[in-house]
Image (cartoon, rainbow, N blue to C red; front, top):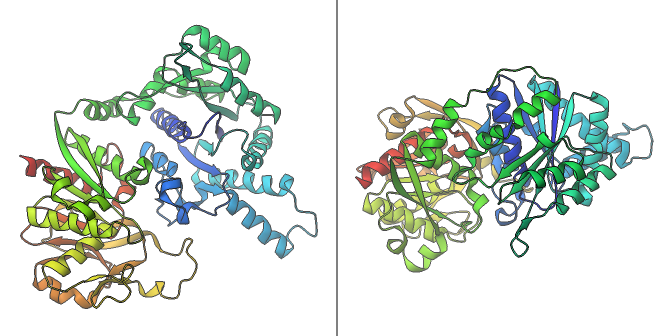
Length: 533
């Protein structure tokens, strides 16, 4: 088994995850089996309780693990189906080490960062390799070189690379090569400094991925090669993509990254077949038509908060050879100024998930606008709940109907806490999480969209539709088109006499891929195109 470790320097948000995922794409296209892993130095056990404004989207895996959004890149760009073993944080490491110490597993020894913490990190890297049966494990180290909390992880991969031997592990360092406008030139010194920091602790990168706004000329490449001790052909330009992140694998292939990695790891492979990927990128870059889709959210200011949703819209659009013009609307603006001002003229309205009551009334108004204007609507998780509340209030006449999450005293709790959640006190990893089956009703729009009677979807929620209101709401044209197999939980709703109104309690955005768009997103874009026509 071969190992690639991806580190980053100078600043955060350089795109280490995207670089790792893009390399995974290229290696898979060469016929290799790849698995990816993220090691995050922060002390949180997982990102499940972290603020989306700080951390971005929480990505949910099939087994219910709440993970970093980079794992979304990994699953979208490759054929990996990841588990909780593929995301490790300092919090998990120290939690495990301290539990072992309390049990006496260390036989009274002094517990230290080296070897006990670093051994735990190395064990997780080996574990991922063993479980996946992959040819290559690509491991991204979160944060930047020099972060104090990241030092145990860098020391662990130094030890690991030594243990597996030359030719079986390489370090790929992602660094910024900034263009100083006043000087009119690219500067290599930040990269030199981050590499120097790595070399101080015994790590020498074999490949340098240079994030840059401007092309790297030969002189700059030679300078980076000399001072960073990296072969000239392994100084890889990673310029900002012009249109879409899906150009990244193509650009890195043109730079020879996958060939260099295969040579360094002594891998004999075929040349990658990029035809399908190129066709997808072409449809994203130069679509034959365009459609305007409004996303009404409460974390709109942060691009990464709805990352998987935006990517799923792109995938679905490309399947129709259609570009997506996203109209990002803050739910609080609709709350204050009404939906018509922000949603008039869009071809579809998407309301994503979220927690807390801020902006909820704006989302409810967005659902009402879609229902009354007959605009295609897709609600995800909280999006389904606000659509339910809106219908209960304005069609069924349940005055002030609400979710028990937002108004515990409401007379009409059409959304209520799951029974198994009532005694939960700890917030972390305690929701209804992971993959659950959905039974889809015959003759429904959902059945038409999925083309089958059941689906497996990923969940992340505590509240559900209150079945006590089912009969009255169905009498008024509310359709429950998907439930749990035992019929006790509502998973999909739609409306009679509406061209396309679907909402789900789960998160379909976590299973969409570039050339395999999720059926709900694909159907939504199809309906939006028909509405626009």
